[in-house]
Length: 491
Image (cartoon, rainbow, N blue to C red; front, side):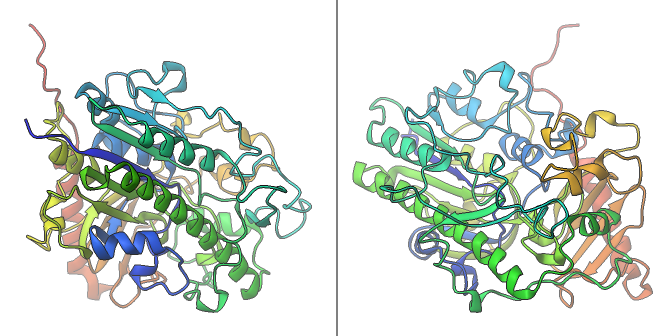
């Protein structure tokens, strides 16, 4: 049997797909990601997640299933013991699986033993939570226009420290130590699900000042009227209260987010350097991908939603560096790909035969430059039906009062109006169709309207396009509506 490659699954949280320098963003400071793409990896420009919030997306890319296959549509419905998880498959195949970082994947009450050999807990506790949820001094008063902005700005590094030592730094340093002490007799899998650049938007120097504000790409402004747009967006826009923000304030928020990305890029580079120093780099497949994106000021909004599918939320970074013995034509690919393609690609590299039907497709032919075509459409889904109270996320600590950071979004999830309606996106190269259950559908001509500002669902000129996309959506559901277990039962 061929030697199995080591694996690094580097998984930042809430990183937009456009916030990288090699994708022609002049404000992004991502030298390590740019170098990998230039020398020995592939960056997929048109990679999309299957749900625009954390847990459903992670359940999807770790199983190869779309959220509808087993109803993974909330933050509180995670992978059950009978469901397939890539980490468990790797562990069962003999990989030494090291997991350092957030969960949002399996129920904590079930433990992590089935999924990894080490669920890392740093010996030196972080000084403060990375996401700053416990630090309200930056929010101002509840009647101010920063209270729901998630903008924290520059963070002060403690005296004597080079960086702000939080859980991300703790886990990155733990991963580096594990690489230095990799087992001699087993292939290593490092899973690093970090918190950055998830808001609140706050970062220390030098990253805070690293971003040239004058180079930020244009922001998609809030529409004068929300006609044709999802009611959830209008509701959040009203409750976040950012209508009076100047462009200069938006630039500071966006630059801080980009600084958070620059920080993660440095951490990514440190992990790659550790692989090189250990002599493992050439034998390692490295994956860099995010679970979903972030508004970061687009449409006058911050954070994310559970059932809207703007490209800033659904398009994600996805970079793959294969082992040296696997063919690769470095650079950028424009083919449509999905995060469900992650497990299929790992399986192809590691020689794993999946023991369940899933819907990912290996990216290796694209990586090798053998083809430029992968998918004709990509899909994302979320929301709920009326009466699905289990999907309201009452468990969230932020819904207890209007003081929670997420209150402008969560309050709509607790109501039976149209805002939290079940919805699904079908996106091709040129068009995006969104079917909504309790409010009008959406249709965008992306070639002429990449910001998705004009809903043309009732435009007779696009009637044929709409019919084609509706048929494609039906085909998608028919192809992926269930997954019959491989093991038959005795009758």
